[in-house]
Image (tube, rainbow over all chains, first blue to last red; front, side, top):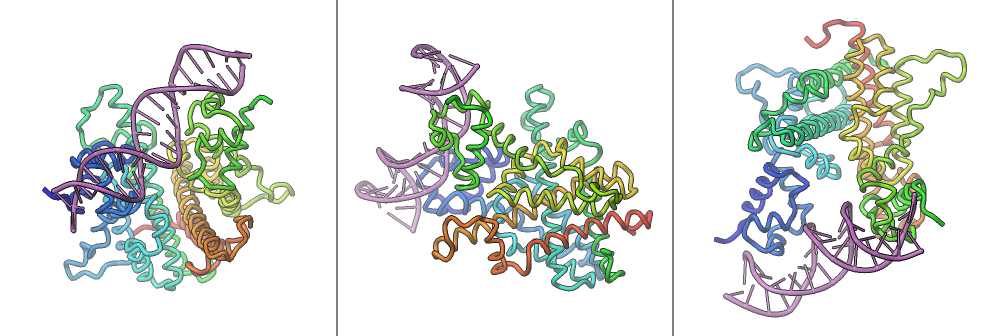
Length: 215
Length: 215
DNA sequence: ACCTGAACACCGTTCAAGT
DNA sequence: ACCTGAACACCGTTCAAGT
């Protein structure tokens, strides 16, 4: 059977989930697809482009129609911001090392990211200026990426340690291991995530009531 | 002359500044020091440890005694937070690709970073609980790292483009090129940085006055 | 104690040539 | 159009052996 671009992408996602970003090499991917390394370069011009396509796939559903819009209730801007942040974090936690991958490949294209634009639109609903909403969207994105990269790298360290100690089955899905994080950090990562998120939302809110809040 | 650990570190910093993180290889470093690659492994167990030492060097003066403490004036907590954030950003902008280097090597050791602890202490001065101050310190760090990585990668892209077009002298210091950022983004990066920073500070402030601010 | 020489086990990418 | 075979130009790391 002939190799399709989508097959290469799916194969790459499988290696990411099973072995992590460090083991995702063009040669390993080629072997897993039963093909020579050079064959991949007919479908993708280089590895960076492949990683970009993976990042797009990971984030494809993040900026969907908000669930709260499906009934007739109009959504509060802060709920929309929080929902977007939650969806972004969840999308990355669904694949091993996905936060690191997204942070690395989106570093240069963040300006054009649909997710960032959704953040900006949600922030603009609050009533702050469009310019301020744009600025806030970057801050939000930096925070969500930073938190999730950190969170995911820690769970990954714990998975590695647990496997060494033989405590956890090697084929357990990464998502079920999040609770082991509590060894090194205090409390539920989701709660920690929401705390920082609320700091932002309150920061935006402060800009609404008071026109000169920073002395 | 015999090679000292400090010589290896200095040589690595020179390659970082002149050629960037992508060209910082153990083999290239060995060549620049007039030594065989294997010699480096007597001074550093591996490349990761060397990168960690570089990150420590880049950040060594960030958490110094605040300038405002040198006279007798007591410092406001928010001024201390802002000063720390500015010093962290400046320290990374002083070396090519330093934000990327710090973000990559501090991903796993952020919990123990002195800079993060300084953020936590400054935030605690506001009157929020120690626990909340710790959480806020992570958010602050994620934001500063994310913003600076983004900012620095953009100036680096512009330097590369400018060199290709022959617009800028190849030996111009990176710091003098920050203004070219305005082609792709709106406004001064320092102003953008302060906007997001104030969002955080106001978020902390909101937690002081109102005990249940998030509905 | 500190370094050389030489290897080991990899990488990403290119490209003529095949089908 | 799609892939193979084979190479090019690299990596980080190890380690016996030298001084």
